Length: 220
Image (cartoon, rainbow, N blue to C red; front, side, top):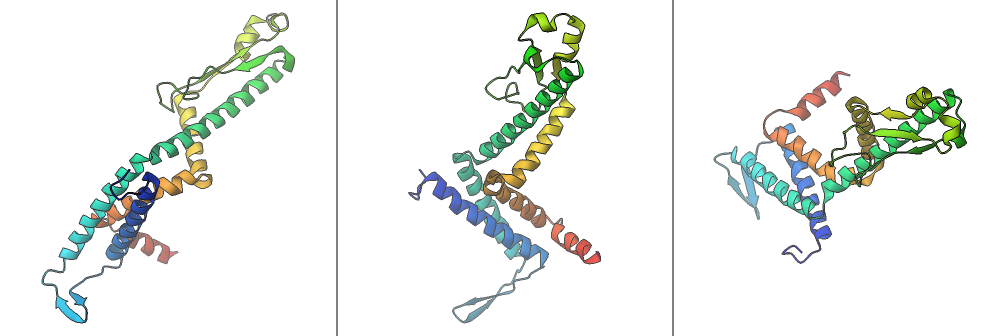
């Protein structure tokens, strides 16, 4: 439990809010090209001799809150939850693709549905090995009635297996990632603050992404 006494989930929500706020402030400060040369304390104005110090203070706060969010997110396994969500969806799309392909091959080979069964060896990580979600997977067609299918061993071999290469599994990974971004809560809950932080970090480094984006939109 964090020192604040809050639960890890409550602590995470607090740090997520802080990171989003400081990221948006940094993006706005850089994109709007704000300059702070005076401060007002209870009606008393104070001039700042070195206005550039403001950006250094914002950068310091940004780094601090990014670190606090990283530790809070890691405590509850936020990134792992999004990763697992993508893996599960990728496994589903791969399984559907493999089943559909093998069923179509069996139909073209004029093999009756009751003459075969589909089995896909998989470990605890689904169709993956050693936790790597882009490793090739293989699915085999096993006959449930050997007398009906073994009459043509060459045909059985042709219909019986399908291999997914790295390009195919990568395509399923991309589809699963896009699906999870648009349809699952894990991306918005755990990953969006990192996206905003990346954007703010690039702005603070002087890349001026927001200014360039606004200029391109104005040209449309």
